Image (cartoon, rainbow, N blue to C red; front, side, top):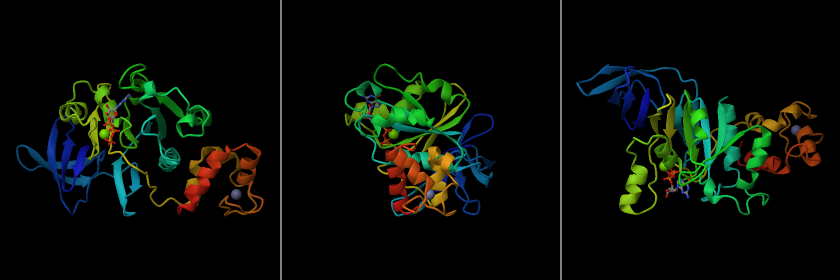
Length: 290
Ligand SMILES: Nc1nc2c(ncn2[C@@H]2O[C@H](COP(=O)(O)OP(=O)(O)OP(=O)(O)O)[C@@H](O)[C@H]2O)c(=O)[nH]1
Ligand SMILES: [Mg+2]
Ligand SMILES: [Zn+2]
């Protein structure tokens, strides 16, 4: 399994658990974090990837220049990390939920820095104030803190025996969570920030770690905006899971739910059967080219 991939080189975990530096051959293609690969010994200390196994899934994003970026492969679940500071951008959680739904894997929402939460976010329409509404839609929402109660205990059972990735805005504490979950691991975050006194150390590479509980945890670079990669309208609508009971009930089979007559989904939103802010979010994502 590939733990880190940068350019034409990376680190691979061998079947016996040892780690080895490896090179990628251009003819084999570039493997990504989480890829299962075949390797050959190159010399005493390094290996060469000779084949990449077919992927169960690829977690993608559209890069800054609208190019396809593979963040990681073969995931079991994605943990969307949010925090009271920095506050999530509008539609960020929706974008992640839609992308994760399209891979048929489990999303979880993690409110980190939860010791800072508590005042003024309950009903003000901010993404954080809506965490209870995500819960009532059926999503699992967990609270953590790396600086005090409730700590990170809530994550332990959900990470067991799974390959999980932490995603979210820069500075919400993804690397701090990894650090807290792997007390024996010398991560640059924490140590480095204490030394430089800068307070933060931005992650630049996606890295997979082995958890003591036999799961794997991937830390990823924070984003400013999560860009969906080539999402078509039906996929987008499917990612809004509460639309499901009304799918197929619109007058037009190819209804985009954006103002067409006799649109069951728009009517459900007008009645309040679909939350208006979720429907508005759908319309914005649709407008942005889905
Ligand atoms: N108050 C508080 N601060 C936290 C908590 N978790 C992390 N931090 C702080 O938040 C800052 C950013 O933490 P990181 O772990 O580097 O954040 P990140 O999400 O990995 O950021 P990127 O790598 O840029 O994506 C650091 O100064 C941490 O000490 C928390 O639970 N509470
Ligand atoms: Mg980080
Ligand atoms: Zn419709």
